[in-house]
Length: 286
Ligand SMILES: [Zn+2]
Image (cartoon, rainbow, N blue to C red):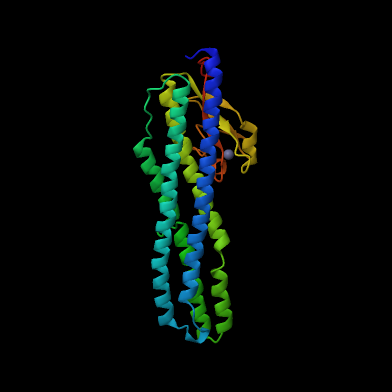
């Protein structure tokens, strides 16, 4: 354990590192949100271009061709969004490990090599991919299905002489960009953030073997206001936080966005968790 004065310096340096990583994560997130909005916007623009025709030209053959093209575009969209979330998840795992190494360096375990559990990471990535997927009712499949059904209804409408209304309906279906972007961002925030806190949690458990280590909950100050109540709550490396639910009651969680917690405690949670050295190893409360 370093001498008291060194320890003050160590805490200050480690805190600076925490802020640096938090800033990097926010920058990455802002860039990715922009990229996701661009991708969804492009998909809807392409869909609209595919329909660049007069209502009276809209017949069954044309619709089938447009819908087939749309499906291919939706698959492309799913690939792009999955790629963005996957890259961000890896980057966040790296950020969490960097913080773990900084912690180790500053609090007396300089030689430790932390690694993210590859199996856990693989499961997390598979889960995110399914949420975005073009199959299994994922986000992209819902976007595609909605546009697809608007086109089919439009064809039907043209057949009975309602061409103008039909085109208006397609246009409405293609202007849901904001809602779809919001959903994509929610998946990103929840899933990428989950990888970050899982890797931090794993690092904390490894480091606790060498230095008495705790973890501290950090409220995002943006979303999930009920989590403000536990800003600063600190538990042991293997402990669980007592997280309040908006409708009352408490759920025990190992880290923000813990997959075992109910969705109401994890969705859109932007909270963080940081490792802190514990002066004394406390007995686990019964
Ligand atoms: Zn939160």
